[in-house]
Image (cartoon, rainbow, N blue to C red; front, side, top):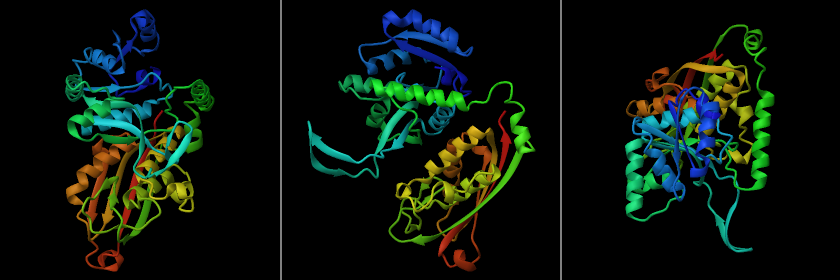
Length: 370
C-alpha cells in the first residue's frame, strides 16, 4: 500500500479484505495511507466479487486502479504510468513479454509443439479503467455467469481490447513460498540502494554540477519490405514498408532514448540494448524507453520536455502526431504537452528525399527530481 500512498496520481485508496481482517486493514490504512482517504470494504466470495464490492466505494472517482495485494513490489512510477495511460485510453493494464519457451503438455509429459511467444504477454496489475466501463464489464460478466482471472479480461469481453503499458519483472505475483523469498530480496535491494535522508538533498548537485541537463539524440533507419512500421511507439497500420533494424526499428524512440541517456551521462542504446543479443530481436522500443526512464528515475532525473523532429517523405506523421505525443508521455510519465513532435520532408534531397529511410532528431531537458 505504501507505493500507492506515495504515488501523486492516486487520490484515495480502497482496501478490500475478508470480513475478519477489516480492523487490521483499518490500522494499516491509518499507518501507511500517507494521509490519503482510505476506505475499508469487505470482500466477496472470490476475487471478482471482491472487486465489485470495492467499486461500490469508488463512486466519487471517474477512474479506478485495481491491484493485487499479492504483488508487493509495485512502484509509484509503474502506478503512475498505468494511471496516466488509463486516463488517456480508458482501459490499461501493465504487462511484460513472455520470455520463457512455452510448450503444451499433459501432467508430466510435454507432447505439444512450442507455442509462438512473439505476441504473448504476462499480465500484471495495477489495471486502470474508467469506473463506469469497469462497472459495466462486471455487470455483464455476472449476467453471463463468466468468471475471469482479471478485470482487463472482463473489459476485453465488452470492448475488444485494452491498452498495454510495459510492466516490470520485479512486479511479480507471490503465489509460492519461494516467490515470497524473491519479493523480500527485491525490496531489501531497493532499500539498500536508497540514499539516506542525510545525504540525499546534497548528493545530486555535487555530482551533477547543475540541476538540469540538455541532451540531443539522432537516429536513422532505412526502409525494409515485409516489416511493420512503428514510429513513436505507435504502429502505422497499413504502411507499405517498415524500417530495418534488430528491434522494431522505431527510429523516433531510438533518437529519444539516446537524447535522454546522453543528457544523464549514461551509455547509449547501442550499449544498453546491443543488436548482437537475440533477446532484443524484434523487441518493442517502448520497452527500451521504459528502461531508460527507470534508469533516470533511479539517478534522480525527471523529464522537463522532449522536442522531436522527424525527417520523412513518407508516411505522413501529422495524422498520428497526437497519438505519438500521448504514447511517449505515458511511457515517460509526463504530460502530453511536455512532448513536441514535428515532421518535415527533405525536399527530395538525400536518402530521405529518395524515400530510402527516416531520420530523427530529439532534444530533451532533464532536471533533478528532488
